[in-house]
Each structure stands twice: as C-alpha cells, then as structure tokens.
Length: 220
Image (cartoon, rainbow, N blue to C red; front, side, top):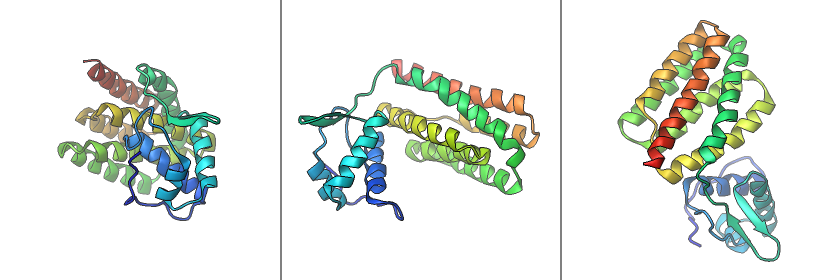
C-alpha cells in the first residue's frame, strides 16, 4: 500500500482527529483507492502515530461510509457506487438552500467581500483549468454561507455530504464550469437583497444543475 510521507499535517488537533482528517483526504483524492486494504500498522508509521488513534479514526470513517471494517479480517476503502451522486444531491441542495436563508440576517459587508473575493479566485482557477483548486474554492464559497447560518447541526451534516461529493469529483475527474461562477454572482446579489425565497431557489438550482451536468458527463 503506497502511502505518502511528505503530506501536510493538521495543527492543534488530537492524534485521532489528525489521523481522521488525513485518511479522509487520502480517500477523497484517490491516494487511497476504492477497495484498497488498509493496514493500521502501516498507516501508524506513515502518520507517526500509535495504532490506537489510527483505529479510532478508521472507526469514524466507517461510520461516515468511507471505509468498511471486517473484524479479524481486513479494513478496506469503500467502493464508489454509480448512483452516489443522485443520492447525495437532494439533501445537499436542500441544506445548502436552508443555510442561505438562515444566513441572511447575519451577513455584513465583510462577509459579502469575502464571498466576492472567493468567487474571483474560483473563476481564476476555472480559467486555468485547475479543477483541484476550483473544487476546493467552491467549497470555501459555500462554507462561508453555511458558517453564517450559525446552525451546528446543518454544519455537521453538510460536512459529511460534501466530503462524499468531493470524492466523486476526484474519482471521476469532473470539472466545475463558469456557470457555477455566474450562479455564485447571482447568489451574492440575492443575499444582498435579503430575498430568502429567491436565494433558496438559486442555491438549489446551483447544486442541481452542477451535479446533473456532471452526472451526464460521467455517463458519456
């Protein structure tokens, strides 16, 4: 099992959290491939940790659907299922839309400036055809809105859903397009207008259109 040794390590987190975050990222970006066997001793050595936090991290990843554990036999990375995008879309779109609605009273010029700056970096990444950066910046954009909603339960659920969506993007080498940038511009403007009904519609259509396009591309 080839495991990178020159990876960046999160700071100010527990050993379990550090292992969890790094292993999740490796599964999302394909460093650890679907159905790949995971050996806790090898992972512990690669991450300079003991086996206990590795095992705890793997248990968390199993709960989230990233690994499957067979006690006494093996632990493997889960497969990518053909219908995953279709199943991920409805809850993701609805919760993103609800976040935008709840965020409206909490938005100020600083947050709007942050959204606009993030969206500018997003279109620059698309223009460079840097799909990896575009995907990360798109998540940053939506996370600003989610954070402004001040709802920890939505935050937690969306974090899990978006992790699986990112895995789909990496696995299928899918690319975001300028259409997403244009929709972000509309979302920002509608948030400034404090129109909850319109912004929920825009947020839903942003996710529906994006994933429908990518699903169609994946089926070609």
